[in-house]
Length: 624
Image 1 (cartoon, rainbow, N blue to C red):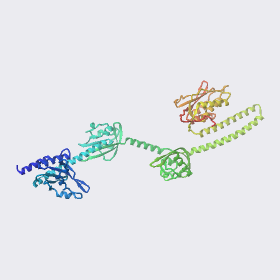
Image 2 (cartoon, rainbow, N blue to C red):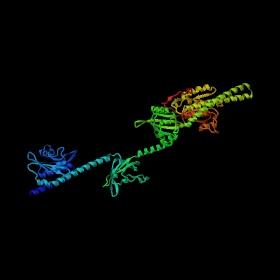
Image 3 (cartoon, rainbow, N blue to C red):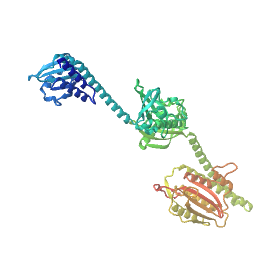
Image 4 (tube, rainbow, N blue to C red):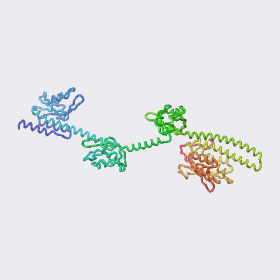
């Protein structure tokens, strides 16, 4: 075989060793083995060219021997590589490079275009120039194989990274490809399976619109999954019903029609948003003022509703937002006092303040609120109710009560004095008329006293923070009854330990019922009994019945009906304030009153709430 034939055969066999393998290293190593074997070289290496800042690095991809660090031939070849500061172009322009070591070995550095260089070392001879020239196409093929393997490795890495990200996304995701105009699923992640109820095996190959479909009663106005790259709010059927999603369709490869479908579940967020909107509408339409301010005398309005605008007679919310909160106080010092109180206590309830409208008209308001921390500052959240009419009525009633009672007492004293003079100067039938006048005077005085008692009941308000021992209360009631009505009989059943939520007003109510049972009794010996039991009309574990039964003639129908309905009419009214005093007392204590006829006479039942063990005990003494 001639030298030319041998050269062609060697080049052909080298070409056969060049091709893609499972990795870049394997591709380079197989080709390098072919070069060394067919060119009778002893050592060799393939280097990849990598930019590194201003310089260029040449790391080894494959070498024979595997540890080339001590090989003198390869070391001599490495000396030809560009030093720091030498440009890459200067080195490439010198290629190919041939050299000889001190021991007579030859080395060759050949260009692998757009990838790196190939270094070969040979003992006992050279690679002739013709062969080296003929290697150029093979070097290009090797460079292309290395570049292809490098790209494939990078793609594989990117694909693995994509797969990892795809599976790690906590939201439902589907990968689709458009085939023949139909967008079909290629894969889905676990959240997609759980949300829409389709496993990856069942989903693969199916149109995405079949897997993620709108509710039957919902039009496809928001798209069928094939439109819009931007985020879109959609409603879709899920494994658990209907969900709200923020949907985005992102192209992976627009040319190949590959897309990623991302569904961010915003169902809970939408519900909270709807609740918040309903809450805003409710607050905006409340007939009371709801607003937020900053603390202090120079506090600012942060948020106001239309109710506050109406109460303060503003034309718009802007009117109030321009004001300092102090501007709505008649007395500016009260703003500081209120602010200090709220900052100290954290919350206030039912504070009565005299404020003024935008036009300077004074009004009375009741304010409740809390102090909250928000973004590093304290903010007051407040509710305001206009109580001007209530304050005016209270003032009018107080004046009328004081004037009427004062004038009534004075008038009664005059009448009593004149009646006494008449009694001394008349006899016979006229004496009975004087007695009737004196009886009526006593009745009017009692009515005046009870009116004052009723006023005191309401002055104490509805808040009850104490508990009363019924056994102790009834024992005191029995002692008082014996002193006030020695002609009557009172029996009190034995009472198990029981506490009700009540204060001194309960004793007033019970004594009033006992007085009525005796005063209005037509029997020779008035008899009254008291018993305590679990409530029959309400749950017994939370309520107690105090029953008062007498042997009297009963309560007039008109008076009973007035108490049972809670109101009087011109044709239906009571004869006094006694039962009303009891009714209002029990109502203020949170209880109920009922009246019934029994064979012996009349029974009145007071239904009262049981007290918690943590509530403080208050003595039942009505004089405290």
